[in-house]
Image 1 (cartoon, helix red, strand yellow):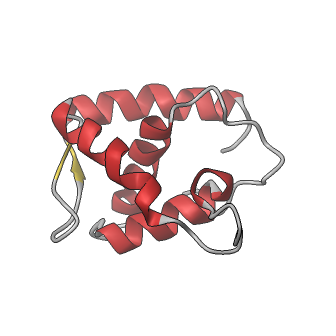
Image 2: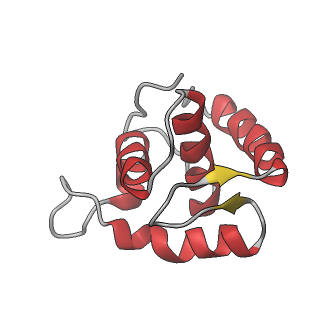
Length: 109
């Protein structure tokens, strides 16, 4: 579906939570289970500026996903945890459709 996003593209209008939802959708759409490690890889591949370490920008800082993932679970957009895998709820799927449309307008897709 999505190969990679250029660092020069502006995705600032989409929240971190929205980008995470999009990445979960992207992993699941490619017929894979979305484990935490796979989610970190997808987020860092598509949106490296969101996840990079400040001092070591070639490495992902997975701690940046912790709070947003908890918020997404609390808001019932995703189910799962770091020990199993993540899936989108029906509400999460509806939100991803809006986010994907926004990203397409920004020419990320």
